[in-house]
Image 1 (cartoon, helix red, strand yellow):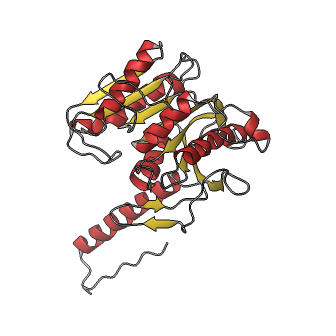
Image 2 (cartoon, one colour; image 1 turned 90 degrees about the vertical axis):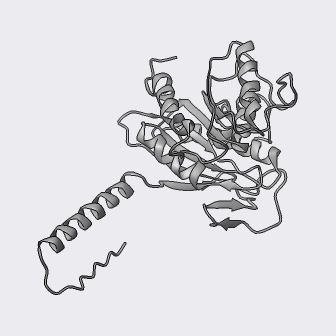
Length: 301
């Protein structure tokens, strides 16, 4: 990265010097922040063509207002490792986008940076879209198995590997957390012999988990006593999807699954960790304490 500084006033005074010092201090801090948070690698999760449905269109990156992917046929994982002397816990991030896009920035890279800051390695899943829920489910299972298969090389504890999903990614996280015994694709290698069960899950303004006024879950979401512990958060003014959180929590409670639910009056849908005023702006701080209490310390259950 090249940085150019132009001084137009030939009479350099103390104010100029102070500004220059401030500029370079800020630049140094910026460069250190880049060094502290960087993508270690990106891997295709399938050695050949992904099994099942793929789209015919070429993949697109949409930059309007944010960075999103469209028409994904080659799913990937992007690994952001945290510095740790011992194997670190890890989280597979499933961004949202209504199964039509993958919102890779505010529900992906920004979340990875936050997870790194609290001691978790982060892995972002770019799953198949559009309208390919079964393909995305297979991608999520494969991603979890690949992380476990490479746990030693990536300094990850394979027994502290969870998922965190937003909106449609919350639905994908819930499906993967409750259907890990379903084989979503034919095994291809040694990684596919490993478990596809996440050790915990986080659902942030999840979608598509509510079917009727009785808070019935959709048929692909079947919570059992083996469903992993879950942290759920959503805002009441997220009218279209708010009941998804209630439905999942009630089903988890009924089956004795450890579940934390944090609901807010205002916060809307989307935004990741970008809220600045709404009560829901602190969801990630609350979630961070939950993650650290149960999964950063290996002695916690």
